[in-house]
Amino acid sequence: MTAKSRAGFAGRTVCLAFALVLGQGTFSGADLQVTVVPAKQTFLLGEPVYVNVTLKNSGAEAVSVSADPLMFGLVIRILPPGSSEPVRWSAGANADGYRELRQLNVGGEFRDRGLISHYFGKCNFPVPGAYQVWGEYVEAGIRAVSEQVEVVVTQPSEVDAKAKDLFFSEAGQFFVHPGGYTLPSQWGMTPAIADFERIVSEFPTSAYAPYAAYYLARRKSKPGRYNLAPEQPSDPIPPDYARAIELAHFAESNAAFPLKGEARLLQAECYFEQGDRKKANALLQSVGSLPGLSQRGRAEALVAKLMEPAQ
Image (cartoon, rainbow, N blue to C red; front, side, top):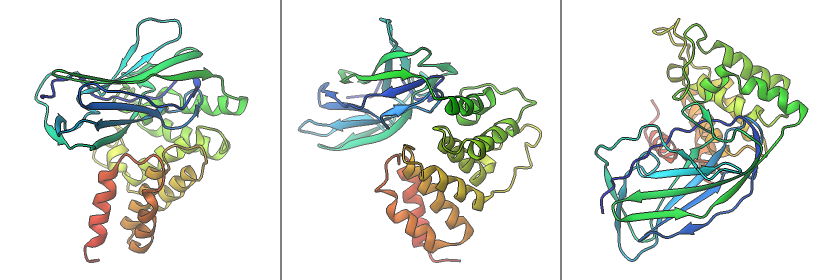
């Protein structure tokens, strides 16, 4: 088998409130099985929408699949209420070029998470109602399709609506999804940072607060990556690991936040950068037991660093 699928993932964040009815299902295509499961049961207007995706070899022999199915091969379909035409959500570029292949052994699985709220700046859930969501993996001679999961759109509370206006500003959405939005050059990152700080301080109980805290923590721990202010192209803001730890812990402490594993991993990375290997190791030991960890490569990299002699 060859991996000649077209797809790639470009996640975005929602513009309305909705709840996902948890469910998972699989439909085998040849020896491959696709499963799509929402990251949590209820989402509100403007809240990032994550789905956990599994590609499993349920056959009797190893098969060749894309080395990165979320980038090449796997597509999420979203059927709006009252429509017969599903929206296609995939990762970025519909490239037809070379696909690196890897073997998926018998019983082997590829797991990752996609952020399906938007696609190239367009909201995938624009009106209230029931949506159907499913995944497809296609390559030469194989088409594996998951069962459909229903997504129900609802409205946020008054408090959540106020936080949503800050979270879902154009600057805020660029902050969450820099790959899919064109930010006016005069903005830089300052408006989004200020808005997200307001969400955390003024609306700490809103559904948007843990996301605002998490994205701020990512930016403060890796300012060279997330500082996109055009007025400072060669003068990145130095990391603020202490604040990043505080924000990531705030996000993880929210019972409904679906990215607890990544928030804790971010704390462990920050402690390591501060030179506190003991705290980094303690947090890392428990990361795997939390939901929402797709960046296992980062966790493995930190394990390798901790195994090296301290300098």
